[in-house]
Image (cartoon, rainbow, N blue to C red; front, side):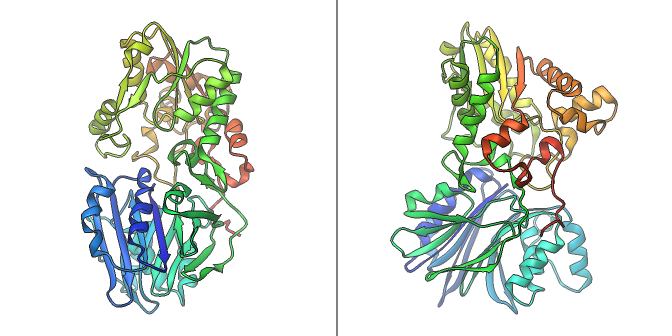
Length: 475
């Protein structure tokens, strides 16, 4: 996915920028970048790979090279950024959290107009540069950003560091979040993907940007440059998986949603079990709620070795993903032995990690292993946010099973996605069999929406049921 942080203060912004960006590190693991602006020195930028290191270890030694009272930081799962631009709009730097599906089409249009692409990485188009080139076609920043909204298929939120403040523009349907923070001492403002980046830096949440809203911050205050659209489709997976437990989206806390989902699942479950555990990190909140709802103890039967192992979906190589998934989780033999165990996890994508976990639990003496998943089955690939490294929908375990049942991985998807339909139950039973589980149940989409507390029409559930607004339905 990716995340960003931008701040403008009356004094040096470098420390706030560094730690604020670091608090978005859980949102991506490919690349990171920082840029600051100083009226005398101009822009200072640095970009590093994060595939083998963490953000702080890459940037800490060069902090003294950044000067200025305004800056942007980004954790990217896509291209190297920030991009620095000199155009008729002035000098500026831009970062994005985006998934642009028609990247090649837009690039071909720009090249046909004799524009050029310079930020090529491994012969791939840099989508942040493409966004910048599209912005440059506007009469001003608002016009240019609106052109981005109108041209792309997918999603795009962005921060723009100008010589006169920082501009934030949230995705046209609000699929990815941007929240405004204000320093408690009144000395500045910030934008962030995560509210959890604010408290320790002395910021307080002001509000979330609305879908398609464009806002500028300066040291003097907040200015709305474009009012938000009415339709919204914020990604439900933010609460299921991506979000840090202490973060809020639309004022709704991540951990609260996970615990409400788990509690409801526990209350509805008639499975006899001795304990419940959560697969760290995002399965823990659901497991705590399940323990309360099902009236069984929560125990840490498996623990994450946090000092060195990142999230497992990020490496591009499947064998390496499998290795990371195995190495980062350590089972506790003393708690598992002779127990009927329920464990909660956020989702099932390929099922590789889950299959290994189940085998290990039985190896360590568990009598029964039951899985409870925080969200419904992933039946549709996401065209809006890159939350897995899957290159095709057929990498989803659900689609592999549908192909085996129907001879076509796209057959009867609506029926397989419908909770408790015969097709749905047959698919879930087959998942349990292939994963070696004593039983498997998924959270209902109705329970997830109720736990989030927003109308379903404002929450994107495309990956579960195939529903979504068209991107052109923006007003």
